Each structure stands twice: as structure tokens, then as C-alpha cells.
Length: 578
Image 1 (cartoon, rainbow, N blue to C red):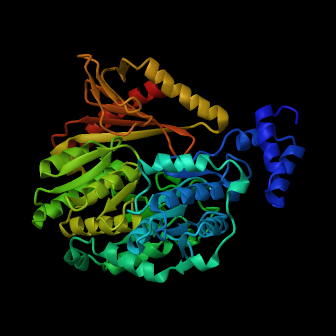
Image 2 (image 1 turned 90 degrees about the horizontal axis):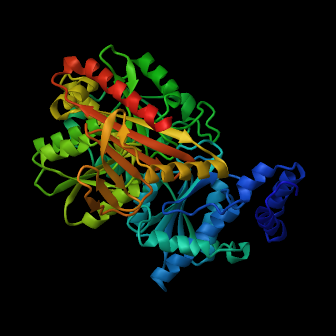
Image 3 (image 1 turned 180 degrees about the vertical axis):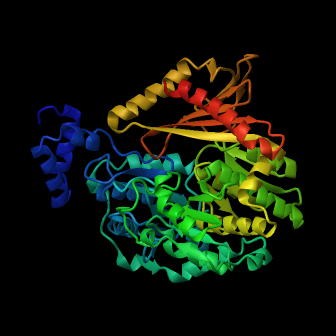
């Protein structure tokens, strides 16, 4: 085929000549006949990487796409590893999916391959949220589990998230070992698709009941919910899995005035009312904001398709609904939780919280003042779950947080949980409303108490082979020539999580970072601002996390200080993207 790299042509021919179904071969032939060189290149130039958290990619034919065969290879590799670890023991896995197109078909493929390998599968009867999958693994005593989801990615995507027996996403050493097993699957003939239906058991409503009971048990203040049971709540699942469980969970703890965005309660993998099904995006929240205005909502909630992340909107001083970023929501949540734990005498000196290294350091300050240990981990909620598993039986977990709208309160699961987060966020709103305090006022008071922190995220998308190379070049450039200044301020500290080193620019001292290696760079300026650069592990993006801070003496100076911080942010943005 003219214009197609010879190595890629070899990979294409392997599929055309191999034991792949006629539909797959027909789709490849159509691309060849139409001389779709770029499409074939992107689909076949590499194997879709099974990373430390699983896979995520565009659906379609090819080695670099999500399809029956790449999912089959992932499941065969995972099956082989499970059998090597557990030997002759009966191995059980839990399996479910979100609302993505092809999700039911893909999930059946995964169930078939597991069962073909003699592994017992608890297969949810229909879509369920990611946190319920984590819960089910723990509840059923499974050795592993799989969630088929692409989270908040566009409709073209699907994904495969693998879990271990603690209900957390897979971490070292199992992650690398599983990757090795998946890499060994070099032919479609290595995959056993011959299902054993007797090893596949359907589960559903009974697990929902147990999960809701566990979420309900997290509630800190039932009396305040009783007093404010008619709190005006607006909720949207953005066409995803939260549609049944979030309203049910809110009702279970006593809220009676939950207003649904009906158009977005329609389960649809095409996400017809949004561009991106991501509560981080203002556009995705447009309909919820309109509904919130119509009912004069106290709080507006939106969960992503697999219901592990939640975005919220609250009223500002002018009574207009504004979206909070993940750091602001986390700040409110942690102040509420630690305040209530302290007031109820539950802080015994052995409690802890966990956050990621790119989540606001304001949370560290809140924990320090309350005498609660705060662990900082790499980006990815699996590292929060790992701390929870390590500390189980030793100390008491209160909550975990990552800036990308992921929160967990309570230890019923080992992954972020938007269902329990929705409950606690509404309880928090009810608590402060009962005190006559709007949440926006509470946020400003937190800034006065601990310091005014403002965060901003820059995400730059670079797709395909070329985009991947450009992202690698950007990170290499930062390492070879780290900036001496950012936003006009001197860089005094450089943390390279890939080399596990921290360099003090002033003294020249190099300190080891006691965390797993990760492709993240973090720069701290002499003014205390922190800038992090990180390629996304789940999307074709490079992300820059900006955190700036200043002192706020009183709430009346809030707007003035906010503008000062915005000017600093703009200066940092210019240095990063130009």
C-alpha cells in the first residue's frame, strides 16, 4: 500500500491473515481500499499499551485500538498472572461496565475469556459505577476485577481498568508483572475465547443494596439532614451510571428535594447533550446550571459516566451559581470532615487523609492544624487506595482526594467514589445552611484561616503518533533545560519524580524522593508557587498544574487578592505554553 510504513504494513497483514473475524478484516480492507494511510498508521503503529492501571483508547480495529482482540489479550494476560499467583485456588473476579457504546459486547468478551481460563466471574447484569465494582470485589472475596470504562473521555473511547483483591487498582509489583504477561500475548491464537458459561454468575440488585447501605453508613450528621431534608439539590449523571445510585443514595440518608436533569438521565454512550461527558468542563454542566437556576438550587452535582468523579456548583455572593474546581471542592470537603470529626470527639491522634502531589497544599495545612496526618502520593487514585490497604488495621482513614474531582470518604471501597461524595457534599451543604452560612462564604473563611490558594490546570491535547512524540519532547526539554524563572519568580526547587530526585537550586543539595517513579516534574518558586508538568496517563494530553497562594486577612479583601493571584497565574501560563 503506497505511503504506508513497511513495519506497519507487516502488522496490518498479520491481522488480515490471522484468525480474526470477517467483520474485523472487512473494516481493515475498507481502510486499505480508501488508502487511509494516517488512519491505518494510528491504528497499527504500536500495541495499545496496557499500563499500570489498564488500558484506554479509541474503539476500532487495530493493535492500538480498543476492540475484541486487544481486550481479549489484556484479559488473557491478567488470567495467566492470576493463575501464576493463586495456583490451584479457586479464582474469582468481578466484572462490570459503564454506558459506553459496545460496553455490553466488550464486557461479554472479557467474561468469556476469564471463564475460558477457569476463572469464576461475578458479572453485573447491567452497567454499574466504578466504585461499586471496587466494593463488590471486597464484598465477594474476589482476587481481581475489571471495569470497562473510558471515564470522562469522548464517545469514541473505551477502556479497561484492572483491580486487585483489596478492591484497589493494581499497584506494584502486580502492575508490572501483569504488563509482562500481557506483552507475552503476541498472537490472537494465544487468547482463549471458548467461554465456560457455568463459571459466569449474574449479580445486581443485592449488591446495590449492600453498597447503598455502606454509603449511608458514612453519614456524619443525620440530625442536620433531618433539619434540612428539603435542601434544593440538582443532579445530572451526564448519561452515565450514576443515574440510579446517586438519587437513591441521597434519598437513603434523608434528602427529599433532588431535582434531576431529565435529558441527561437518558443512558446513551453517544452523550448527545454534551461535547465531553466531563464535569470539569463548563459546557458539560450547562444544563445542570440552567436547572439549578430554575429551582434556586443550594448545590448542583454532576458525575462522570462511570460515577467515580463529581463536579459541583454553588452560589456566589450575588446568588449566581458558579462551578468549583476539584481543589476548591476538596478544600470545603476536608475542612467539613475534619471539623465534624473533631467536634464529635472522633479524632484520637491516629487518623489520616491522603491527597495527590498535584492537589492543593491547602489540604495539607487543614490537616496539620487538626493534627491529622496527610499522605501525599503520585497522581492516580490507586496510590490513595494503596495507602489505605497498607494502613488497614493500623490507623483510621478519613478521606482521600485528587484535584481531578475524585474523592473518597470512608473505607468501603479502594477507589474514588462519586456516590458517597455526593452524599457527603450535600450533607456539608445542609450543615452550613443550618448555620446560616453559604458555602461560598465558608470557602472564603477557610482562605482567611489557612491561606488563599488558587489553582489552575492547563491541558494541551496532542493526538496520534506525532502528538505522543511532541509530548515526550516537551518533557525532555524541561529536564535538559529546566526553567530558572517562572512568572518572573526564581525557581528554587525542582522535583523530578521520574529520577526520584529533589534538587534545591539554592544549596545544590539533591534529596531522594520516596515515591514510585513517575513522569512528573514539579517546580517551586521563591514565592511558594508550585508548577507541575505531567503527561496524562489516560488521554493524549500534557497537563500543567499551577498553584499560587497569598495571605488573606479578611473576607472583604477576597476579590482584590483573587485578581492579584489571577495576574500571577497568567504570567505562569505565558511561560509554560509559549
